[in-house]
Structures are given as structure tokens and as C-alpha cells.
Amino acid sequence: MAHIIVVGNEKGGAGKSTVSMHVATALARMGHKVGALDLDLRQKTLGRYADNRAKFLSKSGLHLPGAEYVELPEIDPQSLKPGENIYDHRLSAAVAGLEEHCDYILIDCPGSHTRLSQVAHSLADTLITPLNDSFIDFDLLARIDGDGVKILGPSVYSEMVWSARQLRAQAGLKPIDWIVLRNRLGAQAMVNKQKMEKAVANLSKRIGFRVAPGFHERVIFRELFPRGLTLLDLKDVGVKQLNISNVAARQELRDLVKALNLPGVTVDF
Image 1 (cartoon, one colour):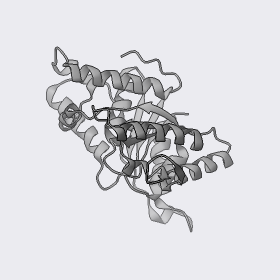
Image 2 (image 1 turned 90 degrees about the horizontal axis):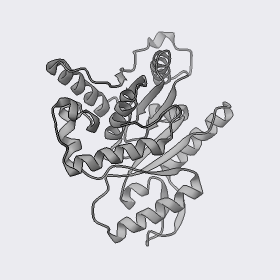
Image 3 (image 1 turned 30 degrees about the horizontal axis):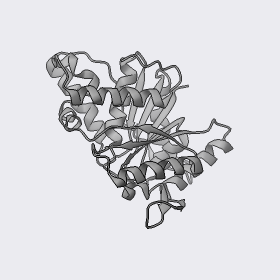
């Protein structure tokens, strides 16, 4: 069966789609067969990223490795039994279609609480949660005191992940490997940044996730999106020498993929 990677966070703007596209492309470039789904049926950022890539490659005549992006199939409502949810069936059908030939299936979730996102989290073998380096985003994981030091209890997103873990345990499936990324980091070492680091480390021990390095805030990610490209594609599209920022970003991606510790993956880029 394919290993399912879910990228989830109930807040927009944390870099989920950027992480999704780069992880999926990295796996494809290492020779793995990767399927990709976008559960944000309204905005479809990952879907547009994949569409931009397909159009750019067609226009330029290039052939670059990448994930197989598919839309959720439509389901005839008349085929459902009483009480069955049509979105559950759409997601199950998409996953089943990709599992036949993919090593990995990457699912990008919306930045809000939806039925599709709930179900996807229960399917996750690996869950990646990008988190902006801010206590506003941290509030999705846990409630803290006014000093940003004492953790008062889990918050809404952590509770959803806990429910997904319980569903997997009841089904006899292996536990979710949950990784939280401190993403879109600033370059300056501020007091808030140090408090965030301590808070995330403390919370990881309490609710059971691993902390992995994410991406710093970089202009390159905004420049790559219109062509559907990733950091790993730059040399193939004619960039002969990467600048310091791009080299650092590639290293961040390398560190991220290593930290995921996915089965059968040896990082070689």
C-alpha cells in the first residue's frame, strides 16, 4: 500500500501548499511514484501549482519529474446508502485509484476545519503541520498563558489529530507520525522566536509530535509558483548558478525530507 502523507493545519498562510509541492517533487525526483490530492476544493492552491507546472512544461518542451496530481472524482449521490457521506466516497475513490501504482500519496488539506480534512487526517501515515513562527498560529495547537510560557491545554487542531489517532488505533492501523514544522521563519533572532522554540519543544513532549526544520521566508517561493516549479527544478530550466539564498533553501528542503524519515527514502539531492 502507498504511504500516505497529509499536510495539514487549520490556518491559512502557513505554507502548506509550498511544502506539499516541494516534498512531492523531491520524492518524484528520487525515483518514487507520487500521487497528489488537494482537498481545498475552493482555493485549490496545490492544484493550481500542479496545473501551472503542466502548462510550463508543455510550453517549454521540458520533461521534469513530478507528482501525478488528480482531482477528486465525482460520485453519483444515488449510489450512496442512507447516512453515507459523499465526500468520504470521493476521497476514498481518489486514494484507491492512486494506491494501485503509487509509492506515496500526498494530500494537501485546506486551512479550515472540513469533513474532508478530518477524514484525510485519519488516513495519514505521516502528518506534516507547517506552523508560522507566531503564537497566533501556535494557538491552534495549544492554549498558553499571557507570557507565552505555560501551556494550559491542547487546542482545536491538536484535538482533531487526537481524534484521528484514536480512529486509527480502533482500526488496528499504525500510529500517525506527526511532524510540526516551524515554517516561514524570519532571519532575526528575536525574543518571540526563542519563546516559540521553547513552547513548541515543550508541547511536542506533551502531545506527541516531532519538530522538524521548515523553510525561511524567501521571495523565491513566490517566484516559482506561476511556473509550477520547485527549488529542485532551477538548474533544469537554465539557472546556471544558484544564489546564496537559493542554495540555503535547497538545504532546508534536504533537511526537511531527511527529518520526515519516510520509509524507503534515501535523500540524494
